[in-house]
Image (cartoon, helix red, strand yellow):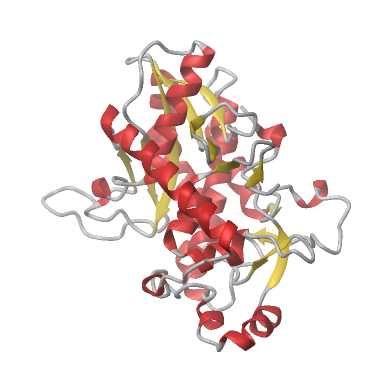
Length: 359
């Protein structure tokens, strides 16, 4: 699925999730490589494999999905069930493009090779220390059980689970805005959507991981367009579905440390492995987010019409290993296509989720 089409009245119809529009806001040229299909084959470029830390984050997201989906049936899953979820997710091979499991990914096609993430056998060879610190499957089971002891009973008592890894937006549920040039809709796939029983508010919840819980954790997710977007979307959908009469003003982030804290207690307090964070947005801040998304869409429309994707050099070194396309942009313009063909492969263009996963 491509993220835009031109409507019969000439307007550009965009469907954004946070990652897509954030890629454009990071660097126009990076966005073009990742999201604008080549006219010859309709495919986009993809490159470097995922780091060990990212793979642990992917594994953790899958564990949380399995755990809370089980809880949504009404009972607290057992500790042994949590161990099974962790072990199954650790050895599961999942296609990073379409998120199907290996045995579901049929038929294989030349333009969509199975590109697996396997926590058991595909840990990057350049990063063996990380695997050793995580202790393979034993570390995974320990992390899952510590989470279970901290939150299983509490979450079951305080929340009603509405959806786990359920997508929204491909059926036009969340309109951001429209004018004579644009129609912009929002899509996404939050880790959880919950009804907070005490407040009767519907909240989006995202699980995040870091090596350890930083001291500034409370400030990491605001300003953050993903948290604002999830709040905006939850309010729209909750009202439409009659799930809540109270508008929510917050997103729930549960941050987990990938590595077990080893620091000695400071002032008698041990460094936490998990932390709850609640980014709060006022109505005016959500309106500002809505306005900003429309402004970014207007700028993207101009870039597409004029094929003018200006590089933002300040973004070349933002990531831990630098932008994956840094080597391409470091080459002379006449050789860039050759560098792309030599160092990158192609996949189908972006899609936020499969329609079967819609909530």
